[in-house]
Length: 174
Image (cartoon, rainbow, N blue to C red; front, side, top):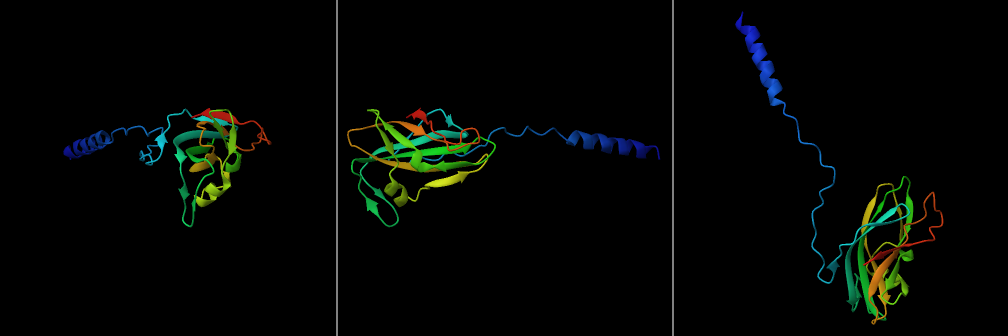
């Protein structure tokens, strides 16, 4: 009978020792790296914000001689430029994001709207609702003169509660 309390105490001590504190949970997502596409260069540009939208430019291809989709190949008037980007809604409500408003600024200061036909051929979105905390990755395409080089993205995050017109873009150097 004197042995029973000792066995119970030993079992309790052993059980308490087995419960080790676990490692703290990571504070960031561990996203696996992806290879850069053969015709593009990886960009190391700090993220920039316009309104409630954060822009992270991750890849650039310029001088593209044509684009090909599932049903068509198209030649540019000048040269195609493709920008791979990730956008994130950092605000508290949704943002109506319009890819047609995003302007490419060239090395001579000219601005170019995205090329509607190229966007259609490559099946990229035109406009979408970017929900609270949502992150989207996609491509933008422009057709610019052959003698120009892409210099910046003039980014428009979309109307927000505090800026319903979203009239001022944010230039992000490439």
